[in-house]
Length: 461
Image (tube, rainbow, N blue to C red; front, side, top):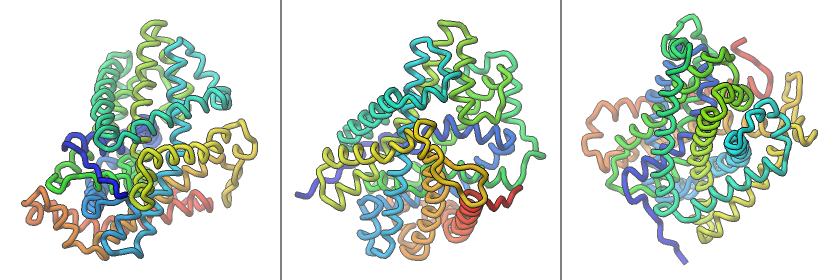
């Protein structure tokens, strides 16, 4: 039985879902960490540059491939009569499954912190290592997160993903605006704003540029097929050019707000800007405690609820990748495909769940060439899926769009809903980027990442 392919019911629904796919923990947790590590405003400027110069053309290309084919990433290349390129689709689905397997674990941490802070347990930050090794509790939160994700995706595009995104995204932005305004009222907050917005050119180097490119690519969910999938549910008359621009602006705007929220708090408490995981899960609960029992619980719980919503918008899009593959290619009913995917991905994520101190084997899972110590399973999957598969996926998509599918066919698809596109400067800019900039830059990023991460060849040190 052929299942009728659903579509987004409105432009706002698509934008909310696509922006939700891009917006996640990477914007609110990882982005401020990368900015801090990259020296502040210098990193921010380079990040913004890459988002619009490199990532935007790739973003609208992925959406166009999806809309043209009306299929998931694997089926897209077959439907477009290029079956030899289906390896990109399989890589995309595999990438989505692997990312969701560990992302769901981190989402469980985040939701667990929301519950603990809501109950007034500010000591959770001091007991982070103990908390993540409590497999029954953290595993329960991760399982709950997976079930909620699966439930939403099982309802389909219009009644599930679109409806949830229309609620989650406005609520997420409202919470961020409130917390950002509150953060600016704290003592010494303006020092944080200065660090974030006033560039120190001396901090700019090759490593900062490299990390800014990686963050921009990751934050927009490129190279993993999520936007191909969402594009396949887009109506033919929708304007991909302007919708893609709004999605990019939304993603960048939320990342920017995250910095305005985090850095005033960091500087008001004298915390290390290069805090990473420790900043969110170890240091911030103590900051909330210093605000007093009532205000601290309110602000702290609201913050981790925000992170939970951000995680959920991403887990929904990641879940849709294997689900759309099973529905399109294997003709499995959506409800069955969802719960099969959820169960398998949760099982794949168990090594990430227990590889943070609970299991010796998965905590010291692999030692890279030239490394002094072993890497845990979650970090290994992160390095493999996020740091390696994403740039090579983007590289192949740019090659396919220009040299296989051909530029004129891509531009024809992009012109539906935007008759002025073919004669606009945006067309020239998109074509130039896809033909010359994207393949070269992403190819270099892939090689550098493999050398640095897996072989210990540090080119910037």
